[in-house]
Image (cartoon, rainbow, N blue to C red; front, side, top):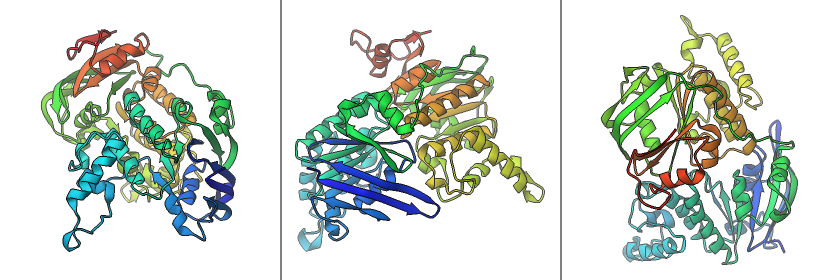
Amino acid sequence: MAYLEARGLGRDFPGVTALDGVDLDIELGRTHILAGENGAGKSTLVKILTGSDRASRGSILIDGMDPVEHPEMFRKIAYVPQELSLFPDVSVAENLFMPFDRTGHGGLVNRKRMEAEARIYLDRFGIEARPSDLVRHISVPDQQLLQIARASTNRDMKVLILDEPTSALTAREVERVFNVIRGFLDRDHAIVFISHKMEEVFEIGDDYTVLRNGEKVASGVVSDIDEPGLIRAMSGREVAIDDHFRPNVTAGETLLEVEGLSGTMFDDVSFALRQGEILGFAGLVGAGRSELMQTIFGFRKASAGRVRVGGRDWRLGDTASSVAGGMLYLSEERKHHGIFPLLSLRDNIGVSVLSLTSGAAGIDFAKERSLVRRVIDDYGIRASGPGQRMSTLSGGNQQKAIIGRAMATTPRILIFDEPTKGIDIRTKTEIYRIMKSLAEDGVGIILISSEMTELRRCASRIVTMHSGRITGDFDAATTAAETLVGAIFATGSDGAPLEPETAHVH
């Protein structure tokens, strides 16, 4: 019998129906996959199930009770968002139990008791941290597990909704999260798991429901459907996934040379990027890949080494000079660093191309409209129009808008940091094709990704990093996955440690 039942749920917004006639059954002791492309209605459904939004029509029963009449029943449902939502400058224990139980002496927090109880949750969820550690000092996988643990401190909770909990984790770290999920189900709870990674769906899922354009289009037992069938249900069509999206051009002149660069989280790094290639960077979370690229772009300060672009010394520590020189960095945290969420799609694109749309009297709005329309059309951005608020676009369309905005300034070097994080499989392939096309037009692309499949499909070469150092530089087309994984963990095929910068295959 279903613990959570939804019948005929609908949600209308001005001019759009986000959900229409959706049924859902969640049983305890099972993992239920909620699948669908970006914009399919998953987020709206989750908001209704957790009580943060009200359905326009339909009904919900939680353990046989209507939560609209009994709001306390919404405490049975917990939600862990895709983005990390922690307080980085307070302790692990404080993050777990905020707001605090102030039953200590004089109405103060009993910190000793709080940290003792925190150790129980850290052990249960396999979090490699101490209760007193500041959250900013623990790893991203441990932060992700901490979010799950924090949700479980609600002792009334029976259904845990996890939204893309592994979007920036490596395979080993994903297995840690999955072990926690499996153990959690043993305690007579249910998991609702939202993911665009097909391999995860089939590894962890028991049941599934597929949404498309706000409607439920398929449901059943995961073992009764295969990957092509699930993708077809999500997209409403066959989605051809090419074997690779590597550029079909010979790499040209060297665009970027990094020599002995050191900084926060990395040391003595050297590599080169050539025109017309996609250079992949693989490594565990914390390997220093993002910090390296942020230093090259100018977000962070370098402590040693130099960078040359087009044969000339590059000015480090100055993002304005990087942009002016034709280098752009697209952050993995697009909602925090890539968009202006409360502004329109038009404003988000136009703000980066003021030099192209401004005249003596200010912005030439005719030029701006023309440029924005060209970006929307060229990059297949699905929106109601240029005036749509950026925050209401799906993640994939936000990412395409960011890429289109970047390309309107005709850069020579593009750095993509986890460009398909939290994006459905059809939109992923669209972004892969965009990257391939840009590289074939002569742009040099650096691709940071936690997905080995993505790197092997898209990259011309793959550089591996471990603990802030480069451990290999490989030809993506000819190198076995096992070799790449060994370099990521800094071990050879025999399990022996690799010396930095010694593994090269071309």
